[in-house]
Length: 325
Image 1 (cartoon, rainbow, N blue to C red):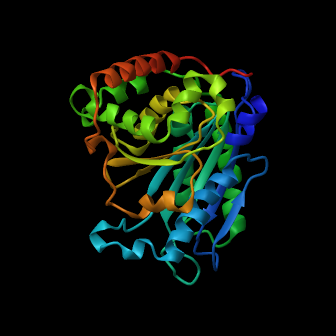
Image 2: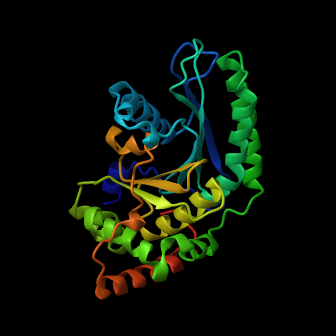
């Protein structure tokens, strides 16, 4: 059964809590020093190449090449790719910064992405410690005249990230979970939260059943993919990602792939749960998606009661450290 879930979700094991953090950095996209798309990923990365390929190559590049965003009215398009993102699966956490950029000949439609894969830590320290370093790397590399200069900057950032993570508290906490539940944008009596849970229950119940019934892993190999646009519920991209990841990682099985994007200039967060495909990345260029919390799903008292119980159980689970199998 363990082999099955590894093959389904790309789970390669969980680092023990006393192990030092393992980190791999990457750059992917367009840069003024290069004539076209380029990428560099530090050795030993596990999920990082696949995640960046899903975001950039299969998501952004294919949608641009197909002209899907060109069909939107100008007021419904996101003008530039300026986002922070977080990906989780098992004990692997990937954080990244997507910025507007251009290539050597001045083409400006594609971004550049700086990202880090951190193994054996929780999302919050990755966001608190790693994301600021990626932002500094991006700033230092804007005027780089070659890929070698960028690689040197990544190597220096790698050492700094290891130092910062080793000195930080990587223990999970319930504070982000509690603050998410108190978010006023979820509406009165957490109605918006129950609408989110209704959508998950209706369209992707396997991810909820994996968390509550491990035996269900062997009963289904069909992995749905679902996109939800959620209220930010935070004062900064890092804070929003930290709160939503605390909630979602406690709600679903830890092996479930979660990919979250927080645009720097818009008050929402986009969640992709499940293995993404190009069509699931359409939201990256669109302002026209409806917030899931605003869709009037039919919520009866029994459903709300069950979801209240599930949320309370997940909150307790949010303070339990990830341990090795």
